[in-house]
Amino acid sequence: MSKAQYILVGGFLGAGKTTAILKLAEHLKAQNLRVGLITNDQAGGLVDTARARAANWPVEEIAGGCFCCRFNSLVEASQKLAAKAQPDVFLAEPVGSCTDLVATVAFPLRQMYGADWLIAPFSVVVDPVRAAHVLGLETGTQFSEKVIYIYRKQLEEADIIVINKCDLLDNARRAALHAALAKQFPRAEIFECSARTGTGLDAWFARIASAEIRPHAAMDMDYQLYGQGEALMGWLNALLKVSAPAPFDGNLLLTDLAARLRAQLQNANAEVAHLKMMLSTGADVLAIGSVSLVHNNQKPELTHTLLDPLASGELIVNLRAEATPELLEQVVRRVAAGWLGLKLDVTKLESFRPGQPNPTHRISQPD
Ligand SMILES: Nc1nc2c(ncn2[C@@H]2O[C@H](COP(=O)(O)OP(=O)(O)OP(=O)(O)O)[C@@H](O)[C@H]2O)c(=O)[nH]1
Ligand SMILES: [Mg+2]
Image (cartoon, rainbow, N blue to C red; front, side):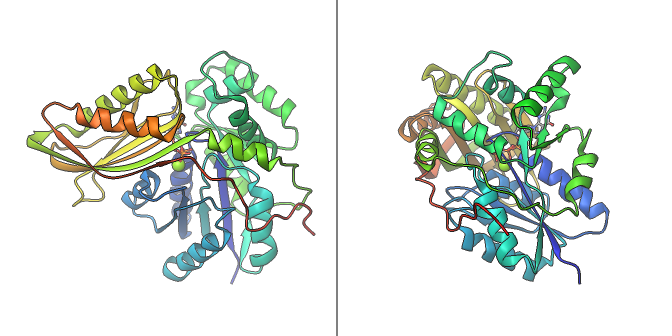
């Protein structure tokens, strides 16, 4: 029996990793291959896991730390998926604030589990608007320097950089970004695509579907700076119960809530990395509405639409921004309480800063 392909798709918060992974899963299924998905976050209650379940994929969620710090959980989750779904291809999405994943995840997997899994070259997905700001090609809202350190390290370790969301760019902007990435990160092969429309995905998928990561010296990392950068980010995962005297429009609720949260975060000068919210009836996991915002100056986008009005609902909120966790909690509670007509009860809420990354393994010079 041939080895299962193990594909890690990294990239900063909001770059489009989950959207691309779900497209890749469909692409593989069309070739009669079985896939298993692994999602990851610092805490449970993930929109991404709910999205994968809503699309009916076998999925395991690793909460409570990133793949590098919870390497054994990653292996256990993969083995569990192997037992229940026998994937030909694993698709794993690390937390978007993580870096050094080649040395701490890809190389250790290759060294310890190389007999079972073929570890693919490491792909890093990029939001072109965010990248143009970080690389100084365009002006716009920005994270602070230590967060940008992480962003640039993610690109530095990429075997493959995937410029996503090309549907948002004209040719000149796309070419300028491609040239800047090629110049500053010469190790990486660069692909251009739109995970949303599907344009350009085939070439990238063909490149990673059966290839193996090449051993090379891992990049240098300053873990103190990395930890300080991660600690500047606030994280919030919440679950809210929505009730109403009469059926309501869930799509309107999602876009309106996102707009109010964005306004409050903007007022507080908190740079949003990714706000995503998903609303479901709870009873039908396939009927979902979701909204997403990846820059302060973007309009919240409805990415899944509910077809029918809801009598009640469950709302998952995942918010990552450069702000204190206290501010994120305040903003979410204030917006939930200030709603007219509907009742939004916060049933669960975790807000925190990611802890200092402390990888289980680090292989800087693989054999
Ligand atoms: N215009 C456009 N939007 C896209 C594309 N791919 C993803 N998006 C949008 O970008 C936002 C973030 O996408 P996700 O797939 O959730 O990003 P992610 O990298 O998984 O985010 P995190 O898990 O929070 O790190 C969503 O609103 C997507 O619909 C694309 O090709 N074009
Ligand atoms: Mg995601």
